[in-house]
Amino acid sequence: MAFQQALSGLNGASKAIDATSHNIANSSTVGYKSSVAHFGDVYAASLAGAGSSQIGIGVNLSAIQQQFTQGNITSTNNPLDISINGAGFFRMDQNGATTYTRNGQFHLDKNGYVINDQGMKLTGYAAQSGIVIPSTPSPIQISASDLAPQATGLNSSSTFNGVKASLNLDSRKTMPTTALNDGAAPGSSTAFAPDPLSYNYSTALSIYDTLGNAHTQTFYFRKTANAGEWAVYSNVDGTTNQNVSSTTQATAGQGPIGLLQFDSYGKLTSSPMTITVDMLNVMVSSGQPLGNGSLSPQTFTLDFTGTTQFGSAFGTNRLEQDGYAAGHLVGLSVGDDGIVQGRYSNGQTFAQGQVVLANFTDPNGLQALGNNQWSETSTSGPALVGAPNTSNLGVLTSSSVEESNVDLTAELVNLITQQRNYQANAQSIKTQDQIMQTLVNLR
Image 1: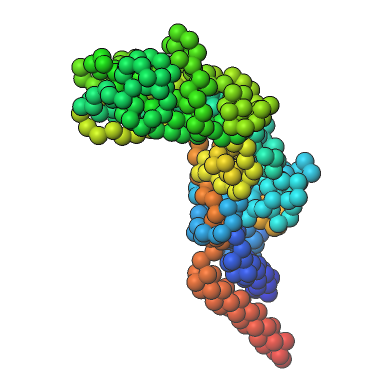
Image 2: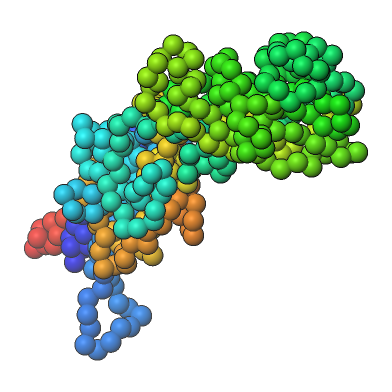
C-alpha cells in the first residue's frame, strides 16, 4: 500500500509545484490572481466502520483556489489604462459573450470602441448628450465627432444661462464729469461712447453666437448722480451701443442697458437683466454686410448677483458665460466613478460613457478562461453589476494598472517546500522497494 500512498504524494507534490510555477510565471501579468493548491487525505471505505487503527491511502487534489486579494497599483502613460482598487471585475463583451477581468490595459480600436489586447470590448453605461444614463451595459464607444458650439444663453445643459459677473464697485467714486458723446449734460441717459473719461470702470469677456464665433462683449460702469446707483453700458466687438439693448431701456440702443442699485450696506438690490445683442448689426459694423448667418438677435440673461459696492478698489471676482466654440477631441480621462470624459480643444469636457464593474458572491466559483478572463458559473452566482464606488464595488484609477498579487519570495519558498515533499514521497517508494526486495530474497 505504501507504493500507492507515495504515488499519490508524488502526484500531489507535482500539482503543487505546477500551481506555484504558474504563479511565478505570471508574477508580472497585469491583473493576475495567484493560485493555491488545496489537498485532502484519502481513506478506503470500510463496511465495518472506522476504527482507531484505520490508515489512509494517500492524498488527492481538492481544488485550485485563486486568491482575489488586491495587487499593487502602478502608474502608466496611457489614460485608458484603468486599475480597480477594491472589489469588482471589468465586464467585457466578445461578440455577445460576456467575460470578466481585472486586467485594465485598454485602448481604442478603429471604430472608437474601448478594447483589450484580445479585442474584447469594455462595457458600461452609454451617455446621451454628455449625460450618463444607467441602463443595460453595452460596449463603450468614443465619438470622434466635433463638439457642436453653444451660443451664450442657449446652453440647455448649463447650470445658468447667459453671463454672470461678480464685481466690487468702489463706493468712494463719483459720477464722471466728462459729458457723453452727444454733448449732453453728464449723467444723462443718451447714447454712450466708450470714452475712458466718461465711465469709471470697464470689464470684458468673450460671448459666442450660434455658429460658435467668439465676440468680445465689454461692460462699462458709470456712477450716476444717485447714491448707490451705477449705470451699465455695453457694446460688442467695439461697435456702437445700438447693438446691445435691454428690456430696461425705453428705446433700444439708447442709454444704459441697466442700473445696479445697492443698499446702505453695499449689497446689490436690483434684479438680473435680460439683454439682446443684434448680431447682424455687429457683423455689418465689422465689415460683413450679410453677417455670418448666426441667429440674430441673440437674447440672454446678465446676472450681477454677488456684486457689491464697498469702499475698496474695483475688482472682478467672477466673470463667466455658458457659451463655447466648436471643438475636436484631444484627450480622454477616466474618473474614479468610471465616467469616461472627452476633453475638447475648446476647453470643454463631455461624458462619453461610464465604466461599470461586476462582483460575485463567490469569485472562486468563476471559471478561468485564460488571458486574465473569467466567466460566470452557477457556483459563482450571478454578476452584481453597478457603477464604481457604489455598494461594495471598488474605485477606478486612470493611467494605472493593477499588478499581479503574486508574492515572488513566498512562491520561491513554497517551491523549495514542495520539492522537499516530492523528495520525501520518492523516499517512501524507495523504502518500500527495499522492503519488497528483502522479502523476495528470503530463503
